[in-house]
Image (cartoon, rainbow, N blue to C red; front, side):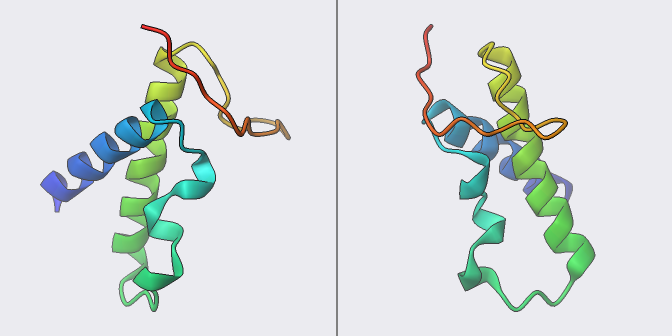
Length: 79
């Protein structure tokens, strides 16, 4: 399970680098439903979101929603 969480974090990092938004979390897609183990599902959902947020912060955009903040729908990575 630990390896799966790390893979999901890495996927979140890659997805953010490719310009995807928090709404694109693969664990929130209807094709993974019904959820049989809520704790496992939430762990994977949160791992992707964490990876996405890390990439967002490292890229200096700070677009993760905070206290009522709006999400940016576009992203350009400069390296």
